[in-house]
Amino acid sequence: MKYTLAFDVYGTLINTSGIFYSLEQMIGDKAKIFMDTWRSKQLEYSFRRGLMKKYIDFSVCTKDALEFCCTMFNINLNKRQKEALMEEYSVLPTFRDVDSGLSNLKEAGHLLYAFSNGSTKALVKLLTNAQIIDKFDGIVSVENVVTFKPSPLVYKHFNKETNSKKSNSWLISSNPFDVIGAASYGMYTAWVQRSKDAIFDPWGIDPTIIINQLTDLFLKLDTME
Image 1 (cartoon, helix red, strand yellow):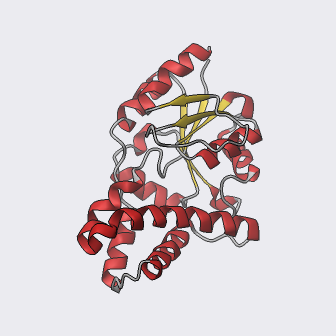
Image 2 (cartoon, one colour; image 1 turned 90 degrees about the vertical axis):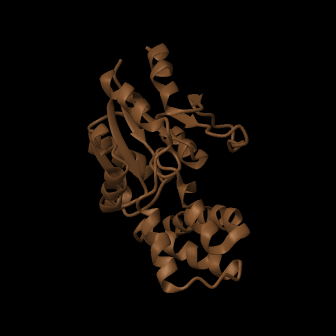
């Protein structure tokens, strides 16, 4: 069977930890906790805006989270440094397994879509820079439904935009909130557990499959048929 595959981007295809080196050069030994808090706040801000029905471009959530971290850790980055970090966030690298993993799935005849909280413009830049944009049959952003994952409206929008059905589509993500959201909506789900220390939320809603890297997905889908 050929499936329609929805790939989360940030943290699944694109390594958000790629910002670490630049942070280390700027702020030293606080780089790791700063980076982790930045990512956590970025997501928190998107969740809160979704609940408040106050949608704004995901890049603004990223920028606001950066400002929060500067205040929290009492780090006085100047305007140029902040702009450099925001620019780098828009051109982060992929994980090493991404190119071959996507290629295998595309060659097998599955339909591949990048599916993200980011804007279409930001995703095009990010995926082009990462040299994987040609792996996809299209890009689906939440911007047209003006809310964020894990709202069920977002997953419904994905099926509408890709002319697919939830019963034949998969959400692939390293973010448990995304997997749980898609599973609750009714899609098949693959959680990419990139680290053995990564914990899945104990909500009683499990992913259809668990993989450690994208190159495992081809074999897993093959056994589902």
